[in-house]
Length: 176
Length: 188
Picture 1 (cartoon, chains in turn orange, yellow):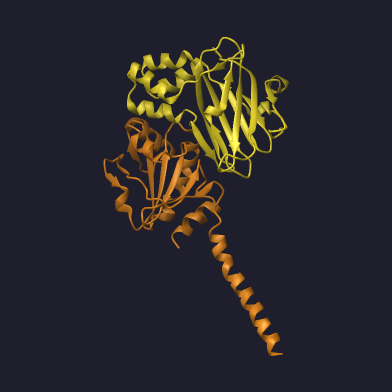
Picture 2 (spheres, each protein chain N blue to C red):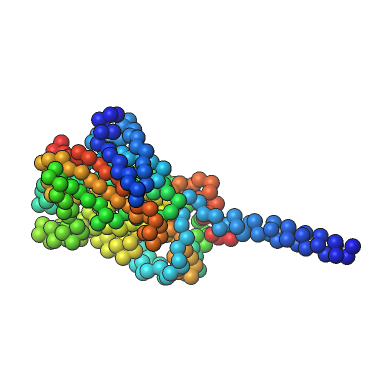
C-alpha cells in the first residue's frame, strides 16, 4: 500500500514538473524568421541621429536594444517600417529601446523617406555605410536584439510584421 | 507559361536531389524565370541598362560609374531555402556558361572596388552598390531568402546558369542543382 502511494506521488510529481516546464518551453519558441545568436558581444555603434544627437550603444546597457538596419531603396524595408512605428508606443519608457540605422544615404533621402513612411520615428545615420559593413547584417533589412549586457541574442531575418501577435509577444517577452 | 518553362531545365542525377518544376508567369516581372520545388525557390532575371541607369542614377551615382554598370550584364537572383536544414548560397558554386560552353567569369567585389576607384565613386555609393549585390557566401536558414545581383561581361548570345547549393551546417548534406537555360543580356 505504502509502495503504491509512493508511486502515485512520484507520478504526480512528474506530471507537476511537466506542467511547470511548459511555459519555459513556450518562451523559447521563436517566431518565424527570428534566430537565436551565440551571445557574442555586440560591436561598436556610435552614430548621430537625424536631429544631430549622438548615440552610443554602450550607453544602452541595462536595456534590450532592437537594432534595425534599413535603406529607403529596399522594398522590404518600406513594408516593414510602418510596423515598427506601430509598436513604438508599446515600448515607450520600457527597457526595450528601438534604434534604427540608415545605411549609406544622405539626409535629404532619409528625411523624405521618414516623413512619408514613418513620421514618428528617428533614425541613426551611417552616411558612409561603414558601420553597417562592420556589423555585416544578412542583407537589408536586418534587426539585431542586443541584450542588457550588450550581447547579441537574436537576429530577425529580413522584414517582420512587428505589430502582429507572435512578434509583439516576442518583444514583450524580452522584458519579463 | 510555356515560354518560361522552356528556359528552366532540371538536372537530376544519382548524386542530386530530383526536382519537380513549375513556373508561374503571372506572378513574375517580364524576363524573369522561376524554379520552385519542395527544397528551394529561385527566381532569375537580367536587368536592362535602362533599369540599372534609373536605379543607380536615383541613388546619386556619377555618370562614369553608371556607364561602367550599363556596359555589363546584371543578373538578378533570389533564392529561398525551403529545406529543413541550412542551404548555402556560395557564388563560386554558380557557373555562368556561354553559348560555346565556356565559363563566364563574373565580376567580384574586388573587381568592383577597382572599378569604383577608376570612376571616383564615393564610399557611401559603393556601400549601397554592395548591398544590391548577392553575397559571396550565405548560409540560408529555413524560409530565409536572399536577393541581389551578379554582374557578367556583356553577352551577345544566350547563356546558362548552373547553380549548385550545398546543404547542412557543415555543407555535407545533399547538394541541390538548378539550371537556367537561354538567359539573355537584355538591351531593353
